[in-house]
Length: 183
Image (cartoon, rainbow, N blue to C red; front, side, top):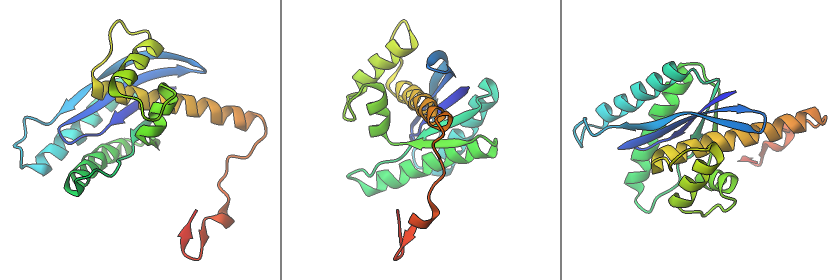
């Protein structure tokens, strides 16, 4: 299974591609999509660069699925909204290419990669380097994207093991809504 991980950002969106064969992981590619060529106030131009960049990565590396980091709430609500729009551009690019997309929080990714949900960027870079046998740590945005892809590979292995054990992976419909609340 070839997994494309995306770490969305308005100025720099990281991407990472890994090949997963059971518990074995292999590095394919990683890098960043930078929007510095668009004017600082040109939000539509930046979103277009992200969309086209993700589509180009998808076309070049032909992943079978994708995993994207979920946006967290910043202290600055405006920054959160802008980051959400960058994430939306990346998601739109992925689903327009008919890729199944999974989503993980930074906490989930860090827990899967480092074992600590509050790990630093440097710790994530170092563990990604070790897990994939890279000669040097990748840049911080590419490392986060590779970490998202690795977390998805680990989650996929766990879900497959549960399915083979005879467990059900279906969501319980009766627990979805209760007094207007989703569970």
